[in-house]
Length: 285
Image (cartoon, rainbow, N blue to C red):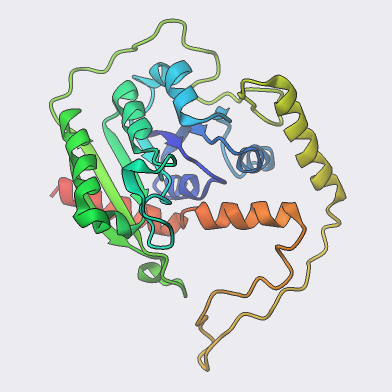
């Protein structure tokens, strides 16, 4: 399948897509550092070339999303979890970081055969599960049925839990997909946009240049040596009993902070692939 990935981050979900044999035809991420990681992985040859839209989802919906109708078979989205996480304020729909409405708008514009969604399990229990029912209702109004499950890294053999809610929405009775917009921009379907190093789509060119320069400076100044970190806590069988302590890793070193953020926001590739496979099996039984 051809995948449009939104809220892509540094690409953990895309690695899961590779495990499933998909081809990514576009990635949307508004943070410069994860965009730079994606571009670097393309230069390394670890990811195929695809457009990297370094912009927020609302801007993507206004300017680009319609061009993916008839191109993307599936939209994947790990939309922000902060409004529903037990670690946050759990403000839900009143949280300005709630990006579900924009996610649903993207799905409506693209009209894929599938939408594969990821969030925290707290979404099932926040406010009695009311907002999850809102999500299912929005999908239903757009012509999608859905299956869902909770699956974590520990279910796939990893030494940490990292439970996540996975939702596979699938279209039934949709009309034949046709292009919504004329003059599809060159590059959709695999060619890289931008200058061959980064793809920047922010409104302010000066700000984009500043962000690129900052990242390039950090890359040039990285001596490549491993920094000492605290030993991870293990039990007598060698399994990790807690997450590693950060020690001084995140103090005053922006590059490391960004890496930690990308990991914290990222998906475990094997978990994403297994969740899709199990949910897809349900709807094809």
